[in-house]
Length: 159
Image 1 (cartoon, rainbow, N blue to C red):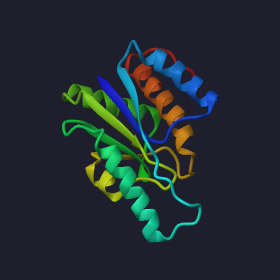
Image 2: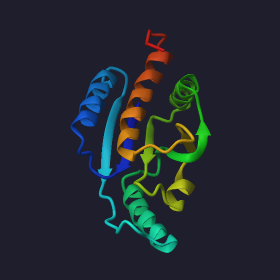
Image 3: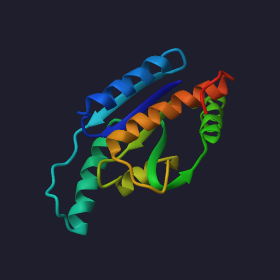
Image 4: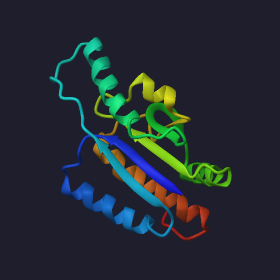
């Protein structure tokens, strides 16, 4: 299985990079996982609704350019479906069973995802009703993907 995490912005925080690298290393025996970063749109702190939409649209175009047409897309969205770790594991297992070998998880920038990305997604996933920094979501997502593979293989993992 080939999994891509397509995300807005560069990761700068060393502690997050280290955590992600550790889980990517662990995932190596289960799947090929790549992180694809696109640049974020520079914008002032105070934006109108129209300007926010323009920023999300530009970031969305960059994200879409990194996703091939045959990829199953899971957008991380606050209004997406809440799943347990076991449900995520089951979903990934079913995708593999039905021949979906290319999966992309998409993480938007600080303003979220564009409507175009949400329309392109096959599924929308939420990790919580709370808002997390998009940089931190990378680490949480990679850990949950790792946990999903461990669950699907019946291998022990802390609860």
